[in-house]
Image 1 (cartoon, rainbow, N blue to C red):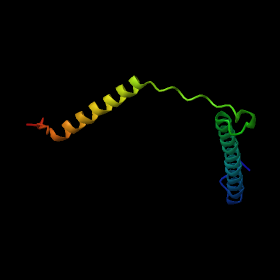
Image 2 (cartoon, rainbow, N blue to C red):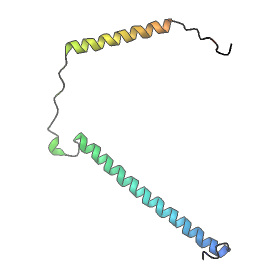
Image 3 (tube, rainbow, N blue to C red):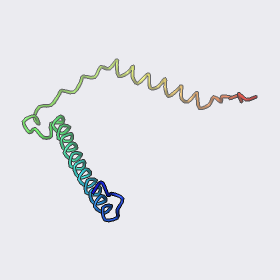
Amino acid sequence: MYKYRHRPENMRAFANLYWRTLLYIASILSVAVIVFGISELSAVLRGWGVVNADLAGITQPAPKLDKNQLQGTLDKFDVRVQRFESLKTTTFKITDPSR
């Protein structure tokens, strides 16, 4: 068949072989992607503790808030807001470099 591949009756056989090969590869890849996706999803759910019911009662304590750190963070935000507002009112003149 390969020796006489230029003949029309053999071209159909090659087209069928090529089409079936593409279908098999696509179906194998689809199954592999679905299996990989399910395994990754189950790993994420296990990490969240959704899948393991015995880990559902275990929770991590919330971090304690330090008032000084919180106030420092809020002050930094205020400085950023002021700097943003000052940049909105300031106009920058950009010179044309081609002149």
